[in-house]
Image (cartoon, rainbow, N blue to C red; front, side, top):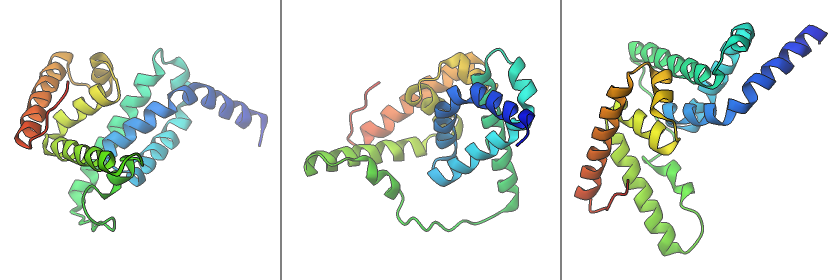
Length: 183
């Protein structure tokens, strides 16, 4: 490896490393499953590596990286939607991947926790994509509305409205399901 390549790799690592955890969580929230999230994450890192000079000049690289991730996800989703590809899941029943989250405390507690997680996952799945995205980014990942605006390009006022409506819809779904919701 030439000294220039090594220096470029070190610069890239120094600029991107502080944002890797957040980027991966965003890719997982967008993709919805680990294999697709890993592919999205790797595609984005591969895509931004040649743009190191752009990254150096960015004042807020975290927001820029998230915006690249979101745009890449949307582009892929549109591309796949046009292909009319039918995917057959090998994972079995819906929610099966969530079962690992329950833990190994008391079997009764684990069962109740898993049940709550699966109800929340089903409720989130019932939301529109726009509402689900803003709830997951804001409430689950801790993004501020102005950061979500930078990622999605949607005005803050619209995001506030979507967040309010999404939370109300989640409360409605969960209360109809017999589950109390918390804000």
